[in-house]
Image (cartoon, rainbow, N blue to C red; front, side, top):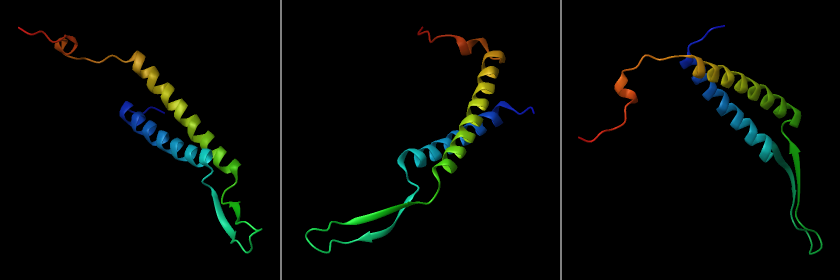
Length: 100
């Protein structure tokens, strides 16, 4: 499938955002919730909290891997275009500043 470079750049940005979000969830274990909590009853009993997963780690890992792979593929396509495409520009665009 052929797409415009601008579309590829937008898709890359979308994928990077998705990868960042899923990576944050995966790395920081944000997919746990506290369901039970026990308050200090006596001097010998400390507070007790139970954490249960909202998601399975393999669900998060699969989504992260999927989006990361897509990101690598779109990056490779963009880099290939970057090295093979030629642009028509005015010569003055490549000149350095010269103070008269």
